[in-house]
Amino acid sequence: MNTNDLEAFDSLWAQAYEIYGKRMEPRVVYMVFQSLIAFSLADIERAISRHVTNPDTGQYPPKPADIVRLLQGSSQSASGEAWAKVDRAIRCVGNYRSVVFDDPKIHAAIERLGGWQKISMTEEKEYPFLRNNFQKLYQGFTFQPPESFPRKLIGTCEHENSQHEGFNRGRPQDEPVMIGNPEKARMVYQGGGDMGVARIQQHGTKEFLELAVDSAAKRIGGVH
Image 1 (cartoon, rainbow, N blue to C red):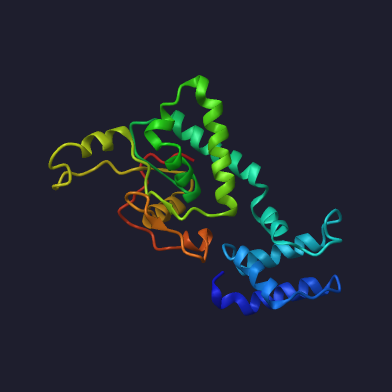
Image 2 (cartoon, helix red, strand yellow; image 1 turned 180 degrees about the vertical axis):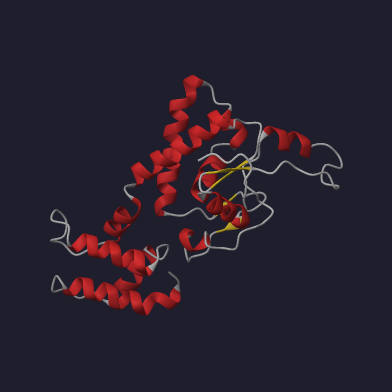
């Protein structure tokens, strides 16, 4: 959603609360709107419908957390799925190539853990700690999207080549491996920063991922 959807969201949320004989203050509706702005209005409407017909939770009015849970699953399950994607890339791609995942939260978490080269060379005995730390960071970003993330995660080859004088003077670089959904990965590449300085605006991660695709980022050896 974006700010133009506020009126439609207000009407939708009010209808949901009317089912329970309740009304909500406009300022509270706005807070709910801001907390769910990353989702489309259609998705929220479907989630509300699922909530009110749920025999276990449907006797209570929906809260933002209910909608997020229905649309994304729990943060724990989402972080587990994200880690499985990272683990697969570590084992299939390794530290040599640069990579682009289809989720900016993955980029942000890996950047804060020291970068792609570091985590992909983690010793086996340290692997459980890496997994736990990654999942904690990812869960945090589920509720508070990262303000910045790198457009790609630099591998050893690109890092070493960049140290040589004249590397950027007409010499072609290996393009990054796209991990997961190739279209979303290209959009992450388009929106990220070279040094992790791109900002996710208030309209949220989902809408952000609908940015134009950068044709420079092509899928080579993608891992699903």
